[in-house]
Amino acid sequence: MEQILVTGATGHVGRQVVEQLVAAGHPVRAMTRSPATAALPAPVETVAGDLADPASLTAALDGVGAVFLIWPFGHPGGAEAAVAAMAERAERIVYLSTLGAATGEDGIIGMHGRLEQLVESAGPAWTLLRPCGFAVNTLGWAAQIRRGDEVRAPYPGLVRPLIDERDIAAVAVEALTTGGHDGARHPLTGPAALSQLEQVATIGEVLGRPLRFVEIDRAQARRNLIAVGLGEHFADSVLAGQAAQLDNPEPVLGTVADLTGRPAHSYRDWVAAHRADFTG
Image (cartoon, rainbow, N blue to C red):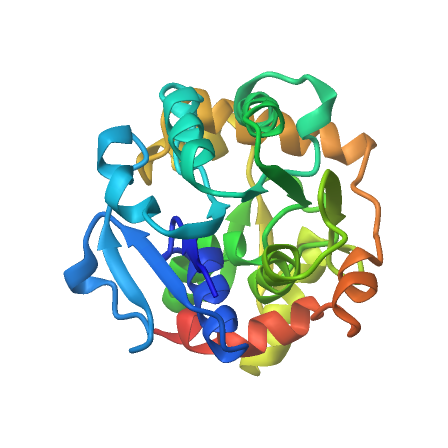
């Protein structure tokens, strides 16, 4: 059985993909910039590699049959060379994209669209995973919640069917290890849409204390995003996407259940699994 290479193996989704592949008995090679601190399960072969340095991918790809690709940068620069290196050795690429990648928009969504084009034209069999907003992104509120009972953010009425990283990984494992996914573009969402107001209330219910959503304007939200390390372009792209979704919310889809044979995790399930992240 050929190994499966997981890039971004220490991130929220990548780590889940590694753990679920191991649990299913598949040989896994995990690529990370810092193998010594990866702390991945013992059967995993952890190797050093950097998608920004295609030459570093040669050893990581040796003997690999399939690749789970997470592109960690906010731009497509260097992606052509990295995908070409994968195409020389792997027979299948499963790419973690985003729900709006086919719209032709600019910014982060446009970056995913460009990566999709590269993967589709590279040569190996391919599958695109197009999740909506990640539930794990609401950990951006965790520091505020640890400090007090307020969450300050824009757009309280923004409604999204946030998806649990465990569900993205479960679909990735299906695409990497079973047939029927060649050329598929799988849109993935959580099982229900909640407003940000409802998301904050759910966190409070799981933690056993009331939380209050305090709306801030877009300019303050932009400053806050930049202050925590997002570049100006990335912050603008995030906020523009959120504003657009106020009038055009993401649909609730049953793809996770259809492909895995079980319901997608609810947002409440996700919060319960990450309770410690909100309490410190």
